[in-house]
Length: 534
Ligand SMILES: [Zn+2]
Ligand SMILES: [Zn+2]
Image (cartoon, rainbow, N blue to C red; front, side, top):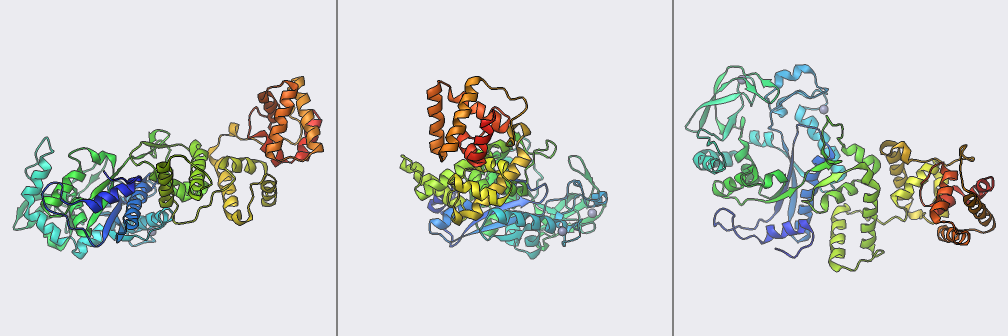
């Protein structure tokens, strides 16, 4: 166990310090350049959960670089996946493409060369908002066609028996006829429909027949053909392909969901195949928990899918990076109502970074600093004095930029150099209020006394005293807060009763933001006048 504090540094350190293979006694030669791989299959919607693989892999890449190693981050489109069902919004005629690799299907929107290209571009556009590293982009389909996989296919095909035995160790029902190559039909171009009938001298004989997915069927064309894997028109089966990818790109680490952590998963099987068949050391896994929304899996049918574009309307990308870069194996559930707390955490980390916030535990400080450095996308993030909750309050009272700046100046939350960040946070807060905060948790400032106002005599008296004080003296938040307590003490009134009275008059509600801040934000003259009319 290394003494690194941050999980990505721990993984980097195990990569750098490992000496031998897992499954054999072969020695590991340290590479000249360390490659971390992140990938996506292009089927399915790109929600924020899918960004986790890239964000977390990038952290390991950064950790390797920070440890002084030459490193690169590659993004692979696993685009040899067959088209399994026609998604909403795609013409029904696309049914004829079921079973074909997504790279070979036309772009339904017509703006790209293929269905896969369209989705790949969409992915990368979004991913670059959340990851600042320049990634080398690959497509598995292109690599097969270019012939890059050839040497690895050759080794795997030649050692089919060994490859099969490694897999069968974990299977209840042994697959004795398992074969590593899946051809694409020469005639109809489909991948899922080719059934092997014979393998001879490295050539794969097949017949093209119907293939059933979960809810759909890919129709075969009946063609009988022979596929030569050295020509690249087909793919390796997944339990051997992953190993070939690692060996081909020299991968030292790759992310995978925690379901791959169990013994016998595709990760370990490919690891063993990589080592025994391809003589390449199994990469270090970056296992992580999947993102849950309000403790449920994200799914279109539940309607709880969060898209990256939703995120950047209410928070900077760095905050999602922080979320993913904290402990990697703790179940992560996200709720929109957590967002203000998450902002506070982010601000706190920025304050620890600048030394504005002190912690006793040195290890904790070091961990926070490291987490922040990896999270902050190399941008100098200076902590703001204005919390997100405060921004929400301001956004509810004022709409005009001039008024917003004016009140932030009065409450000492304004800094001219941070104009951009402050106004951006107000904008995020406004959008958050409009989109995710239920009406009964919002407020609006009352211009006159609410019609059904009910207050005890003592409460009225206290508000009159406040009105007088506001008229006579000028206050800041602290001194006004102190004044409230003086009045309470003097009148033997509980602070709670006083605050409630204030909220009832100013907001027509029982609760609200800090009363002193609210009064100063609304304007002491205005509040004083209103309190006097009670
Ligand atoms: Zn397109
Ligand atoms: Zn066919």
